[in-house]
Image (cartoon, rainbow, N blue to C red; front, side):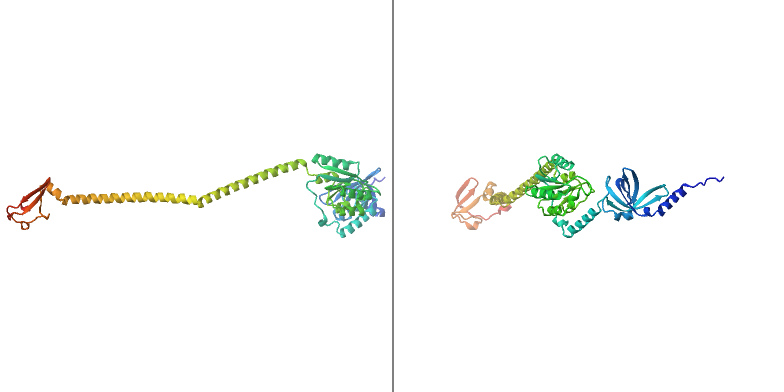
Length: 407
């Protein structure tokens, strides 16, 4: 009896892979189901699981096939995946290698979406130059959405938390179904005449069918024509509608729309305080600068003032007077000194001093000094000046005798 054949794991997996390759159905098929465990890998590949109530199927879309995906896949989406089933030999598992992924049952809707998007883009309705700026500070917020649900609750809650002074005007619109586009348009027209500062239009998440009202051309036209800035907030962050492209600003969620529309009051108060401090600082700097300029001008005015010049001239005049007095005193002292010298010199030549020294001064009757015997005759009257008076005498005789310097 022959032993049973023994195969390796790789052989078995390869055999199964060959069976998959020979099955024409598995070479190209489309599978629908709910997305689960979706992971966008850093390599660019997408790994996810398709599931329905009866089972699961592992799937992968390689980076090179990403052109076959026109939207962002999220957990819970119903999709149709086209590709081939094959065996991963190393892991001993099979999976669906996707080449194209579309939302389930929405192929025609998605095609209509792309056609309308292309049409409106060509008309310029998505152009940035038509986008209106969202006011930084608003007093009244208009909201077009369903009156019940998480979207309106989030908008009201966040608005009240950020700024309780903002008034909210809600237009309870129908946001799903055949009547939704007309209801949304009426809501925009109503709030346009309600003197609101900003309008939020949107709803919570859902399938492409649920959000289809926001892909309607009439809604897009109403958003484009509205003179009030509009923020679109349709579905989740991964959902993109025509309204998002036409609106002045797109918010990923209704909660985010409220945060974008309503400036936080406390931050506003802090800004006012900061501006006040800056203003006071600038005002103080201006005042200090003005005071400095005033001081400079006052000093300049004093320098050019007539009274200042007069005082300066007076001071200079007083200095000149002092200088003249000093010079005059110095000149007087010099003159007095010279006079004293002259007096001393004169004293040496003074006849009175000579008389005091024992000499006398002899005059004739005419007052002429007699210095020689030749100037007198016998019997002539003469006067002899001595220290304490005058002696009047008469010449008795004249005799030539010894010189005075020989005595």
